[in-house]
Image (cartoon, rainbow, N blue to C red; front, side, top):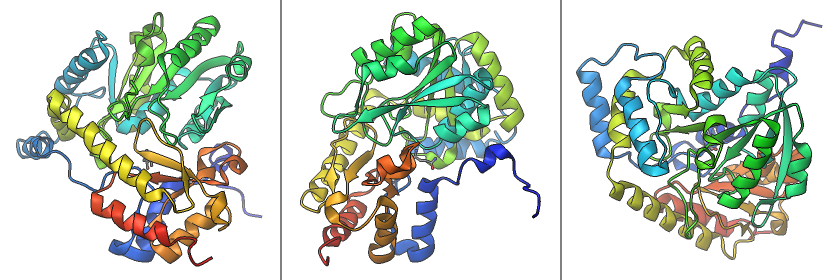
Length: 392
Ligand code: GLN
C-alpha cells in the first residue's frame, strides 16, 4: 500500500462541510442556487469602505503592511474597542491583525498551546475549532449547550476543568445557535479560568448582531479577565466583507508577542489596502451599527416567519445570523440526507447539523440556515422550504 503522504494530524479531520455545501449548490445549480449554507451576505458592503479600499490600491498601498497590522488600522481597532467595550488597548503591544478571524483564532491557539494541553469548547460549535485544536496539538474537551436556550450545565463545565486546562473557547454571539452568553454565564466561566489559570479565547465576530434586547458582553471586560483573554474579531460580519479576510486579536502583550510570531511565519501579514479601508470601517458612526442590527432583525424575523408551518422547528436566535432548526418531523432522513435532498430537489443549500458537533449523532436531526441574505433570496428560500415535505 502506498505510504500516506499527509500527516496523521490532517487525516483526523475532513474538509469544511460549510464550504462544501456552498460548492455543491454552485456546481449543481449555478446562479439559480440559493445558498443559506455558508455564513456570508449576498448584499453590498458599505460604499464608504469600498471606496476606501479602491483609493488605497490606487494610491499604491500595495506592498506588505507591518506584519502585525498597519498602524492606522490598529489605532482604529483600539478606538473602537474603547468605544464599544470601554477597554483601553495599546495598539503597539496588544493587537495583531490577521487574515480573518479564522487565522486570528488559529494563531492564538498555536501561540499558546502545547501538546497535552486541554481546551474547553461548547458544543455545538463553529467547525473550525476542532481542526484548530488538532493543529495546535491540544485536546478539546466538549461541554454541551442544550436547546431550546442552549444553556450549559454548570456542574458539567466545572467537571471538565482540570490542571491541564489551558483555555476555553467562547463564541458569543454564537455560531450556529445564536446564543448570546449572559454576563452571569461568562462570570461563571471566568471564575473557572481564574481558578485553573486558564485563558479565554473569545470569538466576538458577531458582536453587533444581537436581538430582543440581548446584550453582547466581552469576557475581557470581566474583573481579572482582561489579562487572560484573547479577543478574536474581524471585519467580515460587521461590514459585510467576508472575502477580504481581515481579522484581529486583542491580547495582553506577552500573548500578543507569541501570536505575532505565529502570524508572521504563516502569512507575513493581512492585505495592506484592505487594512486602510478597515480603519474607515471601524470609525463608521453609531447609526451604522444601529441600522445593521435593525436590518438583521428584519431578516431574522422573515426567516423565522417563513419556517413557521414548514415542518422545520426553528430555535429563535438571540444573536449572530443563523437559525438552527429541528428536522425530525419532516421524515426526510438525517441532516446530511436532507441537506443533499434540498440541494438536488430545491436548489437550496443549508448546513447539516452534525458538522457542528464532535459527536455527529447529536446533530443528525438539525440543520442550520444562514439569514444574512437579501429579502428576495430569503423569499425564494422560504418558497422552496414550503414545498419540502409537502410531497411526502
Ligand atoms: N463563519 C461562517 C459560517 O459559519 C463562514 C465560515 C467560513 O467559511 N469561513 O458559515
